[in-house]
Image (tube, rainbow, N blue to C red; front, side, top):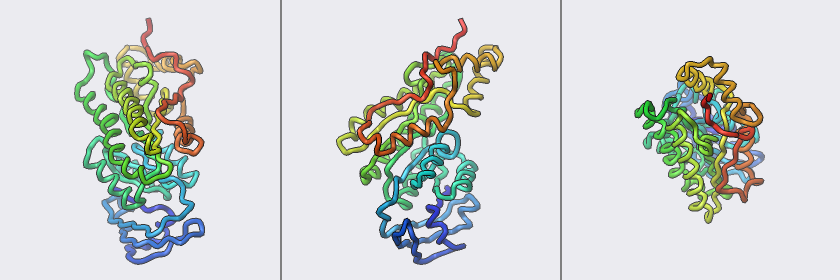
Length: 316
């Protein structure tokens, strides 16, 4: 587990510091009692942090929790929230990636956690509760690609793992987040789903099922939480540029016995604009949905895809 205090606070914590400190947040004084081992954090080991703000600054921006936040879409979303001076806590299953992200983004905090594991999900919220007390925005981003194969050859263990991380992990995180979101005046949940949840996706049964499930949860939670002022929406990207879609295309090409370049062109032709999207394209919409500009938007899915015409990849 890795937990780091917000950047402004961390400057106040000396090596093996213990004591009463005063911190300045945007011209307001915050009194903090901190028990913290810097050696633990820098070594990427379980650190001891008891962060108890006695007052919160009046002009503090959103507190944002992002699953799968150490790489890919999640990392870029986290960076974009940090750029607008929000407080960000990430969680990710990779200790190395969490360490790297926190080193590159000293204003963030983080927890190493596999959100498809209930005990790990509990640890995330123990850390967030100690550091911040509540959250304003939950971004359910963590997910894996799952197997690529026809249904009769689909690996059953791969199916179970994909559903565990993508769907059960989203449920575990949201179930624990709602009590903290209720303390916010700008509560929002944003599920990162996929255009696979709108069209179906040949050879990707597990992934498609998990993303359709996230859409169903989004609609259900929007109904349940709307009366409390908590908004719930989904973002549905098409293929996102990067190593993950590259690996999917390579597996698809191998399965079909086709050149990788030909299969990539096939994927690009899924959208009218003949393009993949970037992590920044997705982050633009996530930041909008978390802002006051979207305060009356809930229960919606927003595609970031260049207009998907279909995901049927067969070369007839």
